[in-house]
Image 1 (tube, rainbow, N blue to C red):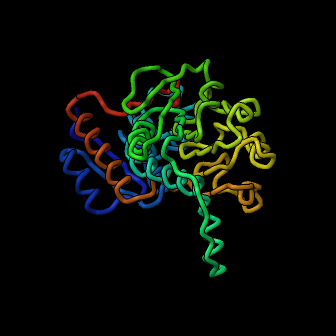
Image 2 (cartoon, rainbow, N blue to C red):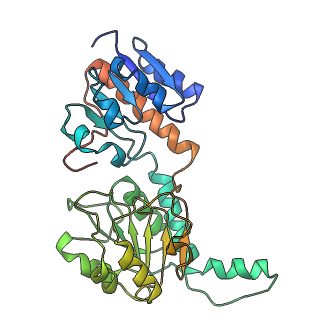
Image 3 (cartoon, rainbow, N blue to C red):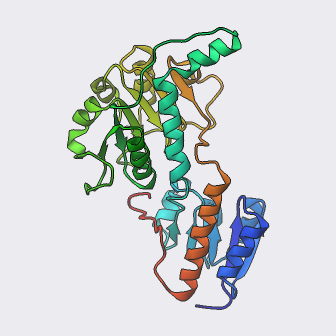
Length: 315
């Protein structure tokens, strides 16, 4: 490809990581911008962008061929003008699989053992020993068996749990004891002690969990979401928590982010809220840089890119 390839980068990238990217593309003109608006000011010069491109900038990006999203789920990029454009997109899916699965295990343990009870006792300097449950023998139901779902299944097995799953394309999956079809959603929900959402938010998954679905869950079951908010209907989830249809929830991903201070989820019964940073580790960003550097090398040599986004599906 042309030696005049212009690559514009924004986001939290360190100098060593920039050196890694430049090393993968020694003939390219690689420029870093700490502010996205500064990048978009020269978007007309870009062949490749690592970061986000707004709709207004896309209209001026006459040379742009490819955008690498730093996110695993490129929802922010899937606006109509971009979807309709010939510009290809790749994502950083898989980069946060390990810490997200760890985050889910943390939430499962905290909910299962009522960690807030111990935290309240510690603040009150009160010795509150009690007979608590364990994860051993319980069933974890995973919605979406991509990289993070597969890693979570492995971790659940280490805790002697049974694992069931549901995914868009049924296929044998390591450490999953049974895979349900999409038309068996209620059976899947009713069997699980934990429902963990790892799936991307797409037109197909948005609102897939409503009142009927939460009522299909065990009253002793917990709901956990770390991928994207909006897969569960917020009103139905709040009713499920407030009226005791389910036992509680661990929410890292939310329909509105940041979660507003007046959101009822902050004080919902048996609910743990974290600020969508289950994957916010330096290792996650480094794995993302590794993905982009490899993709840039492939782009220059004409090889197929990895993590290519299917615009019709949104991921």
